[in-house]
Image (cartoon, rainbow, N blue to C red):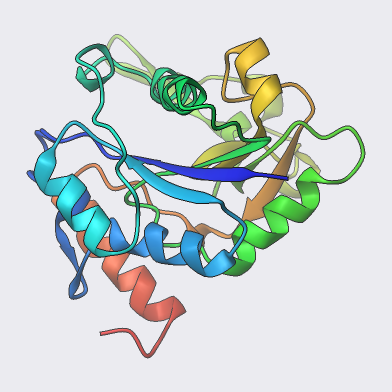
Length: 231
């Protein structure tokens, strides 16, 4: 059963320049997901989809393949992860290469481990599962959220004010670490969150969006905490 890992890494990040190849504790950040994908030995191909020749060069130096560059359409600010993945799969199919499974790893997903990838793959083999993605629990019950109306702040859902925290339903968000999917389902449904998607639940210290420089510093602190031998 053939599988491909796709790491979408567009150039031209504005909030954090050169974000996808910026130094993260001594190594280009993109090298982390490349390394764990290769180490898992689950993939026939670990490739980086990029429009940037410098990113391509660094990715190749760390063991990934870059068999083609992105099209103009999937290199824009508005291009979606789905459009990138579908384009990659289409390009491989033109070379008569087909994959039963596709795993998307973001270039800043430094908290993904080999064991996490292997577990996602095992989950994908159970029942009628079409995909596995990472999720995390909101740190505070969102039923207790507030909103601003005019100059005042009010409860968004006042009916939950007297409900004990432990009695409120747990609600989760997309942790954005990996998406391991059946290729045919992805292509048919044309969405990342496919039907019959199973959650791989992560702890809050295994998740960090990196959109600003402060996020970057926090991610490095979390990484050092998780792996105390890190630089």
